[in-house]
Image (spheres, rainbow, N blue to C red):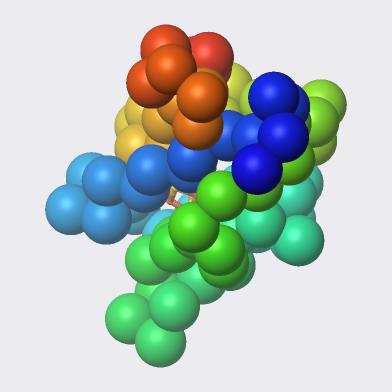
Length: 75
Ligand code: SF4
């Protein structure tokens, strides 16, 4: 784990399946079989695309936390 690692949490009960996040950060987010978003891995590298995905979500279902100290990074 590096200092730039983030934990991506998706509130699947809140997700309305727009697919915006998966289109923005396809390496880290995907739509599951039920049409709702899910994280593709437990931790990801912090990056502009992931931050943008969290900020774009219309229902704020995606939250990024620092893997190092749990601090909320976005949105
Ligand atoms: S952008 Fe938000 S509402 Fe749309 S698929 Fe991703 S988590 Fe769900």
